[in-house]
Amino acid sequence: MSELVLIVEDERDLLTALDYNLRREGYRTRTASNGREALALATGPETPDLVLLDLMLPDLPGTEVCRQLRAHEATRRTPIVMLTAKTDEVDRVVGFEVGADDYVAKPFSVRELMLRVRAVLRRARPDAPSEPAGFVDHGRLRLDVPAHRVFVGGEEVILTALEFRLLRTLLERRGRVQSRETLLIDVWGMSPEVTTRTVDTHVKRLRQKLGAAGAYVETLRGVGYRMVADVPEERPAQRRRS
Ligand code: CA
Image 1 (cartoon, rainbow, N blue to C red):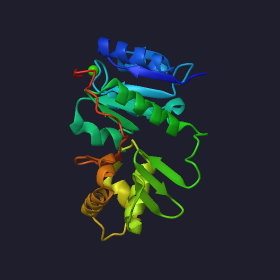
Image 2 (tube, protein in one colour):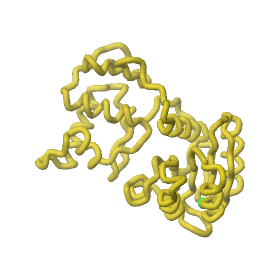
Image 3 (tube, rainbow, N blue to C red):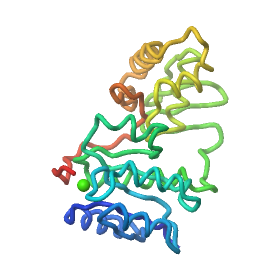
Image 4 (tube, rainbow, N blue to C red):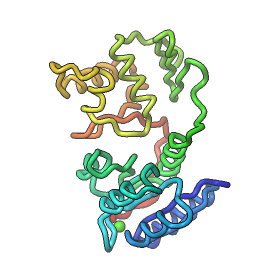
């Protein structure tokens, strides 16, 4: 049976558009236009495989809905993607405080959202197929993991061991925001003399070395970094606010 997506959005037009597009992509859907309805549906007989959750809802803030989903046994591990026009809230939303898995900033293109949904669901699947032995491919980028070699459009790029680890970590968690603190712990092993500024310096250098593929590493100001897909430019379909 196809995966079930719960869409929580109080804007009728947007809810309808999301519902239509997700169904067209082959997902099953449930819809809710407020927080309480969303909580009732999510914790009901059929647990959704993913929740698309608007941050600004008429009854409860999306952050509160998210916290309650995290606190409930059935939905503790359900992937949650926040839809938000408030980019200054992003660090709270994807951070420990609220616990969403990812976010999409409004206005977004439907195509971008569909890619994000697919990526989040794939990650959440316990039997997710791994990359072909030893290689990680991402657009023009190819990592030969066992050999510690990186190629951009077939050309080898020489990275330091640390830069390689940084790139590999971002790639393995593509689509997900990585805070500087997370990167410090996982890439640097959190040596005490290292500051978050060090992360910025290394990301900058890595980006320069990757040339055209450097654009895959997106900066989220004040938050961290994220590996994004090689998506052709497309104008946002929705020009709406929460
Ligand atoms: Ca809203």
